[in-house]
Length: 133
Image (cartoon, rainbow, N blue to C red; front, side, top):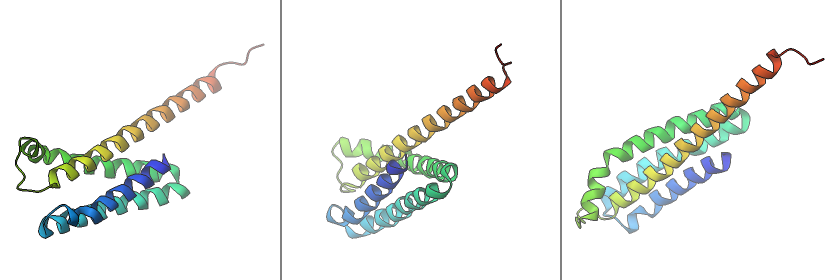
């Protein structure tokens, strides 16, 4: 899980750094700043998870949810891109890639939390059952 958080952050930052090669300068700088904030926050969450697993994982889940929500707002631009509108260069494609990374991370965090909740419920059931004679 930590590895996915770190890799997600590094991948998003790398996409932001490479954006000027595929976009005009104004759009590339906007994408770079957003990628640096989101990717940097994933790296910070990964670092937090080294000390406190829950804090890091839950913070990464919240940041991934915010990143995915921002990507949903850009779906209309992606549909236009698929229909042939190249006025925004490759920006819609990169934004959808970030949204996919964030959705994968949100899904992974949710599955981790659900598995942990199930484990705790099973532990409680085992501790409450009377000892067998």
